[in-house]
Image 1 (cartoon, rainbow, N blue to C red):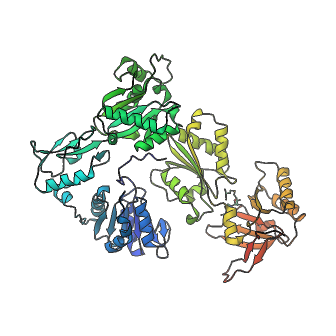
Image 2 (cartoon, rainbow, N blue to C red):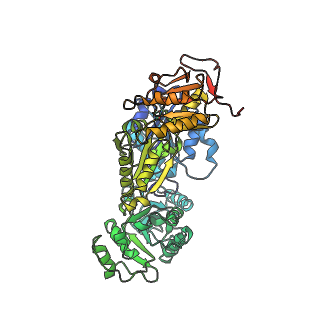
Image 3 (spheres, protein in one colour):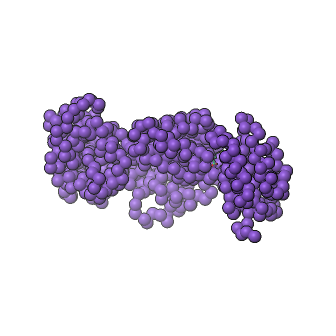
Amino acid sequence: MSDAVSTNGRADGRPPAIVVLGAGALVTARRVRALYAGAQVHGLQGRIDVSPGAADVSFSELGEHLRALYASGTPVVALCAAGIVIRCVAPLLANKGAEPPVLALAEDGSAVVPLLGGLAGVNAMAREIAAALGIAPAITTSGELRFGTCLLNPPEGYVLASLEHGKRFVSDLLAGQTTRIDGDAPWLDAAQLPRAADARLSIGVSAREWDGNRDELRIYPRSVVVAVSVAESDSADSLAQRVRDALAARGLSERALAALLAAEDAMDSVALADAARLLEVPLRFVSAAAAEGSTAALLGSVAMSAEVAEVADVGASSPAIASPRSLLANAVPAGVAHEIVHDEPALAIALGAAPIDPLQLGRARGSLTVIGLGPGAAELLTPAARAALDDATDILGYATYVAMAGPLRAGQQVHASDNREELQRARHAFELAAAGRRAVVVSSGDPGVFAMAAAVLEALDTRSDPRWEKVELHIVPGVSAAMATAAVAGAPLGHDFCMLSLSDNLKPWDVIERRLRAAAEADLVMAFYNPVSKARPWQLDQALDIVRSIRSADTCVVLGRNVGRPGATLRNTTLGALRSSDVDMRTMVIVGSSTTRVVPRAGKRDGDADWVYTPRWYR
Ligand code: SAH
């Protein structure tokens, strides 16, 4: 789903969780948050509220929370004693695997201690935080203190060939050896390395496979781009193997791969997406017009901007990038007719003179994710929906719901619209996704219940642009208003029930009447969505009359208003006593069946209603 480059355990770019235990730490926490786009303040429940001036996320148990963050690879800045942090994550340290940066920061901002994640840039973070707070970071890594950089943690776009060997190499330097640098390592210009032109040891920056020479610290620049053509018969394994074989034949390392490239018409190929995942590289696409040439042309059309130094063609009959034909294919603008005379491209490789940023190559396959926010409370938003929001480049929805989806990252585009423009909004989302963006459409509750998921599928069904078919579409469920209301009321939906929208905006009123009668006769519990609005003043009364003609006046009715939101109310009444003036458009009306009953609720506080439930059995 994401464009993230595989980082071999580095947590590059992921915003940290800033964990605070008390309000006294908030000032420092906010200064750190300002340093990292997308960083969130995690506050201990009961001590710090989730509100714009305080925490963004709340947690109830520190140890559990720190371990969950650590295990998910999230960088952690904990504003508490270093010892506490160490004790909390200690049980996880024996496991090898990704180790995110973990730092302890004094509440008053007077000390910052990098604890874990030496290879994930913890010292760099400690320096950044220290610089912002005007203090000295507690760096204890010898190599870094001596050389001013961590050789084992090269910058974005570069990757170390062997960590184990790297550690020995650094110890050799610390023990007094000198080194030369073969290749381009601009970030080492400012480092205080013991350099000597005739040194036995060398730091080699090259995309060529390391031969295991112990005297060389090999660093791969991610400067290789492979373009492939995909056939129906290709599997993920066969595609990945083809890439590996081709790289091996050229002596290039798989870890120097920056991206896999293909033509847009292969955008929905599952084999291709899985092959990119196997190779742990981002997948990028270029327009079909450019791809009409060879795979080499495909590369040429996008790689020019990335300072490609060399392009090699692999495959029986694919032409070289320098061939007139591929040059032609590059030069001809999309849409201008031209003839392809040779067309058996298999795979082409571009080798850049420096790391190639995959984001510069063509575009990603766009995605469209429709999510449900639940009724409103942050804890009723599912982690899957939160993850989709965090990953989005664009967020679309009714303004009120978009506001509920925060906090959003800087740089995320918000497209708020009127509640009535659903189909238009769905089409806009497809347009964005077809252009390579990651669009998220928000609904309240569940997106599939009288909400945007159906509008999005309708937009796809009536698409005006064939590219919409290639968009990666996901629908993430949410807690619907009926479920949220039922839970606070007890279990009124404990037996067969139906959900009905009383809005006649999109369906004729007589259909609603027929369904109400059928549901009432079938003795189903009924959950009414959209019960009334200013534009539909009489419909609820008419609906209730129909139900009353079939079901008895003492039938239980639950009214949940603004459930899961500030000012939530819950009321129990009966079908006989219910008046349409008790209900507004923010109310969920649940009308019980003949068996729905009330049980006293112990320890009721003001405004609490008794429990209502529908038994599982039937008489
Ligand atoms: N997709 C939403 C429903 C949208 S229809 C969901 O699954 O919940 C809008 C109707 O849902 C409102 O008119 C109201 O009847 C109900 N509703 C939505 N949020 C609610 C809430 N927090 N409390 C009570 N009812 C709610």
